[in-house]
Length: 243
Image 1: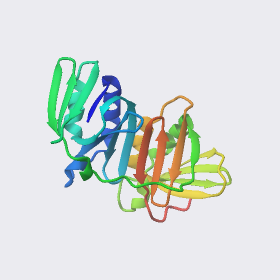
Image 2: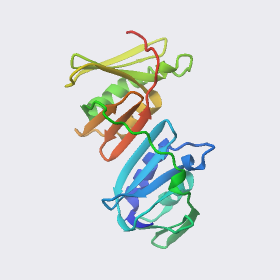
Image 3: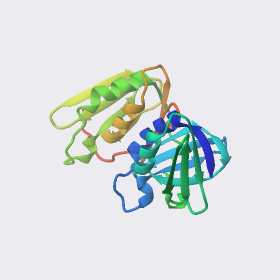
Image 4: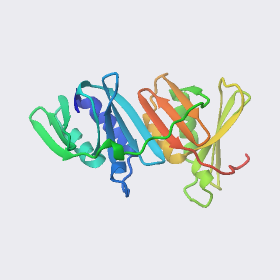
């Protein structure tokens, strides 16, 4: 694998996907970021802790396609210290990864991508479209009321409920209840509970412009498509408070 990309794009991508990387795991690959070249000649980065996954794609010049898993902590520290120039990443057959940028050169040992768990697929899911500012305000105005205690795990997330072309986002912690309602276009009814951790990460990726966000919930998982980022999360299961 041999690719070249811009340092600024790489730093932003690594900083964002790194938040979904497991800090301590029995599986070493989960403490890393998956780097993979795409058929379009770009570079895909992925962080995943078996509950939350964040992926993104950045522009790259692909001289040799391939994939590798690099320690998120080491790789993140390295790319932030690089000069603001073109970064070259070269991975040999033994997964020795050379990162070169201007006069700086680093070498770290990667992990084969075959050891990285595959992200669940969300197929046949309904699609909900919202503008970024609306979703941002709905999350921000309800996130504070999510329960910290695991006494009732279902309340560690927010309920998204769609009925009669209205979307309710509800959070409750046993002392207070926060409800935000917004009119949307959606045929049918739907409800699911998104973990508070996931919503916090989605909130960090949402911009203030009028960009569209696509939400795709399935029976067990949910996808948020935000610009060139995709956030995948497991949903919470249980009986949410009947508000």
